[in-house]
Picture 1: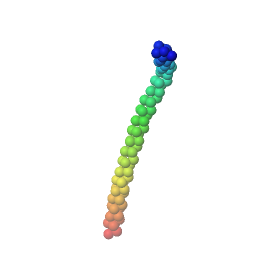
Picture 2 (picture 1 turned 60 degrees about the vertical axis):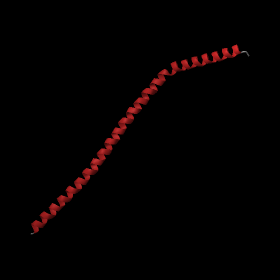
Picture 3 (picture 1 turned 135 degrees about the vertical axis):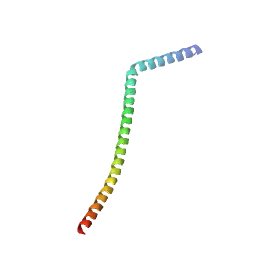
Picture 4 (picture 1 turned 90 degrees about the vertical axis):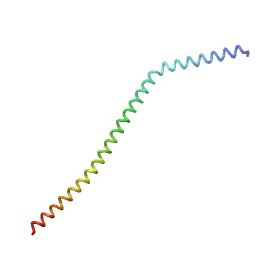
Length: 90
């Protein structure tokens, strides 16, 4: 084979590959756009879930703090009740 034949063969190969690539891009363009939308939606959903988990964690911490405060208040009430009952007995 001569250099002209090799050049022609390589040129035809590049042209065919370019045509196949262009055809695939045209065919797959809607699917690629759909995949991009799905990925964006998943990203937004992930952010919402993270905010929900953070909110739940902060509420849990507040509940634990509130529980501790209630225990202190209940202890004070018990002390007052004991003091009142002692005063009644005197």
